[in-house]
Length: 133
Image 1 (cartoon, rainbow, N blue to C red):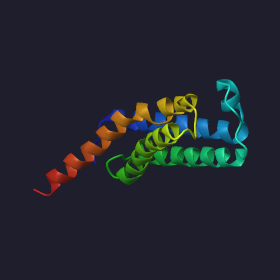
Image 2: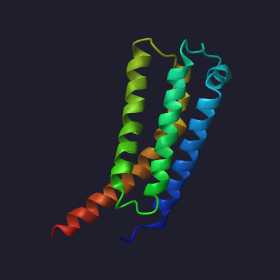
Image 3: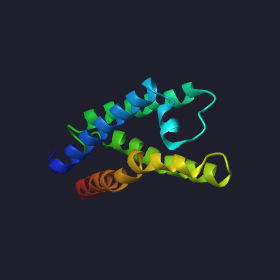
């Protein structure tokens, strides 16, 4: 199935970013908190687990980059994570459970991917709706 080249480029970029971020968080779980001057987590293994999950998402994005319109469920799961992550931050921020500085993770982990992932999923919707005619 034909798809615009930018989709593959975006998914490969997301893959590389997620894999590198995941490796960083797993190997140096306290460094993010040190850089921002935040209190270190009591149980850094939970943060490392998050890094592992983010890294695994990266593998999925890489595989999806070869046929984004076919492997759209991987993009959809990633997109949902990129919506729910900021939602969870907002809830936790307003309840006082997390400082505002933690929001910096949302910029590169979530927000910059909303438009391209949403555009890929919209294209999937267009193709599938057209095929039903």
